[in-house]
Length: 273
Image (cartoon, rainbow, N blue to C red):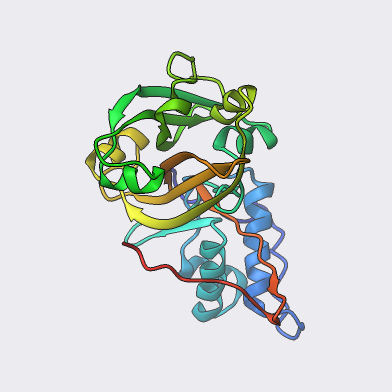
């Protein structure tokens, strides 16, 4: 991480003062000043920003105003605050809609102009355990196809995914090269397309293997997706578990009001098992 960078360029001109009598709260004004100056000065993730005390002096505002502005910026994912070290420009997180659509990561990233490359770690027939059996509606011990991939987005480790398919469907992809290819596109070539599914998202901490593969270290923040997809004949076509880096992505949900209660959003909390 680099040394602190002043928000305003050096010179005789004083920064524009925070308008105390304006309708816009002072912490909103300060938040926009910080965002604008990060962009104007071309600051990069990891650059150290001025301290709370420095911001108070520079803009003539109280520490309460500064802390409110920084808290909002932290919630937006624009800054990171590290206790004992300071405030830094954050690595921007990429919004993903995987949690509420039937898109795969390959299609999601391609739609925004990026590229997904996969290190295929396993691509083989294995025996279903109890969890996989329940998900695919097969008995434990029955053969299923496992596709395990470390996914990279624009060259950076992004997610570690284990996809399980019923053996008759999985045989279609056993010999295919999926390093730079979409699994969903390949299945579509065989007339198999997902038309509905159930997905869940939860937070987790990386274990040693996950931390090593995703380069977040043991205990690093992860977002975990679990998904079961069904084809047009209502047959289960896949079950996957995907561990996404929590410092590189966030999931966005499109919410609509329940017809019975137009002023509320229909949400359901499912306790983690």
